[in-house]
Image 1 (tube, rainbow, N blue to C red):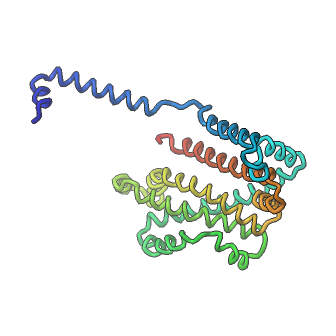
Image 2: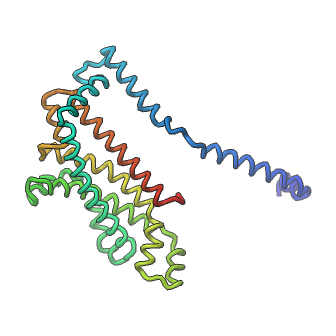
Length: 281
């Protein structure tokens, strides 16, 4: 027993005071970590980058052809919006990503739950999933076009494949990380397999499922652009490729910024949905 322990044992009142002081320090540290950041704080970084970008272009440190100023990009975007070109391309891309993402995420969650819940399915199909997952999905596009032809179906398939695997793996990991005591308690009280999955395993796996959905959102945008650049007449990816070939970098950057904005909106939307479905988190 060290000297501090002996003093605490000899003087209980002093030990109690020291304990209260330590708890107070811990609460202050936790309170500091949990401070709410103002909503405008997330905008400061973006505004700062835009101002720096504009200054670099105005001072002609970088030629306008290589990096146009944000003000010029905004003017080009307004012209494209006024002509209806931007509206048409954005709607085409949103349609493709909505269909592909919904199919890939839905199938990924269901398959991941089955994979995590059944040892037989896990033993048989896990090696298949983990062997296909590292393959770059864009490398499969020529084969998918050969199988499905030229149209919207290959684009839906590409996006769905890119979303499917991250969601499957994260859902599977989430199911495996559910506390077995919860499952045993539910089974002991007579819950059916369906109720165990619906009321115990699925809520316990939701944090990991949402992690997979967020990861898949970025992947879906990458595959959308790649598919539209190769086999599409309309869409943000096709628009970027078109203006890149013409070396009209202001309109090219409009497409890049739209993709950045879409990625931000998808992430914020998934965060909002996660807060609604996981209030305890």
